[in-house]
Image (cartoon, rainbow, N blue to C red; front, top):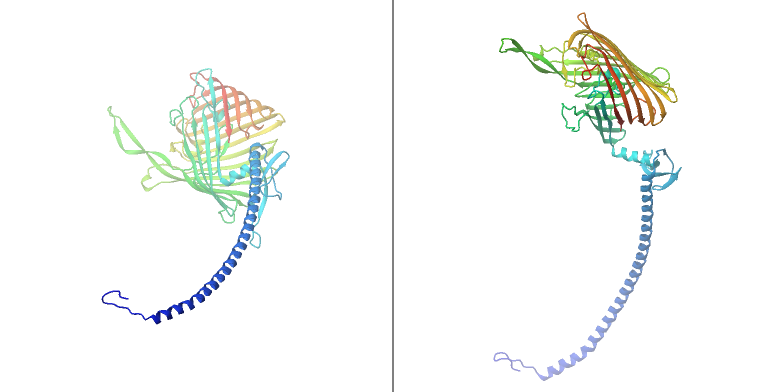
Length: 572
């Protein structure tokens, strides 16, 4: 064979025959080997197929079991949904709240005395072994709402009053309501709004943030913009943090920091307080269980503005010298101590209160005159007094606080002379003494009577009414309110008030005297006069100023007034 001109391959015939015979001998052996391998592979495939078939059967069983479990879970969810729907219906229909404890299935709904109840889990204290188990507690629906409210930790409550009024002689005017009583002698509005939010509550320690807003609301005009001329005012009277459980060895004590003071004690019928310490900011501890009573302590700021004479003296066009004044702000700190709830006899408690007001003048305020002041009180309260209560307060005060007790109207024992924090007048160590009685009693099942009485005297005080120093005074203030109880929601009654005050300055005497009679019918909730609200009262009132040497007051040109209207009060 010839492939190219350069390469020539020569094969002999014998070699071709030999190669052909060898190939024919190898072919059967090759075919035999291929057949054995195929059979082996087929056997291996059959084994794998059997294994896959067994796995398929197992998977089918698992799928069937899973379907059963899904069906059971779906059925359980449907039952839970029914329970939830029943609970929602129960929350809408239930009205009474009582709490009982019992062992019962969680998320079950039962009916007891036609009241739907809700069961929830609450954590139980850890056992000695460190394990904890849920304690099943039963709540009525109203209690369940309270539980949710406490869990959230937010509350909003307060007070307001307002209403409509007029008189037989133009605009009605209130006269000495702090001496004659408030019914039919109070025509403005007032509100208190308290916001409280829990910020921590664990291991017996609780912290709450509290804000209180209060102020006047004019009821004689339609527009109610915040301004002074229309008597629409607002202030943040409290902004503080209150804690419980942080004072060592006193788990029930309350420690607070911020703009706050110890609780006020109000004489409702005369609308002033026997205990009141307005504060710009401070720190206090309440309810320290010491001995047989409870101890309250507070240290607060209440700076005052003092009018100070300037050295520069101007001269007017006529040559008269004019003295200029400026206001100096003087730092004032007040320390208050109360030891209360001392048991006497059955249903009677006793308390002792003391407050010291200490000015803290700077070196450049040596020519500013601000005197310190004391307030001391004894308080005796008799509960269960003919179905009501009676509280007696005996007080003494000095300097500017004593001057507050000499006012015809508001007698709050404050250091500053007014709500603008002004310290005015000449105070030379004057003293005042006051006895106050307030309470209510049931004369029978359908007769109740409430009263407020204040006897006060003082010497060498500054009269804020007359703007005169070195004043001696005596005063008698009273209001009594008997009422007939028609039922829980209706009362009819009369409030009678009388007062007389005599101020004497440098042998000259000033007398103020007046009386009031108010007829009313009240729609209310509860039988108590002083402790039940809301209250809607319709009234007609007659007031007369018998003498007005101190206030120079008149009712639109007359010495008397007939007014009528309707007023409401509510706590919420």
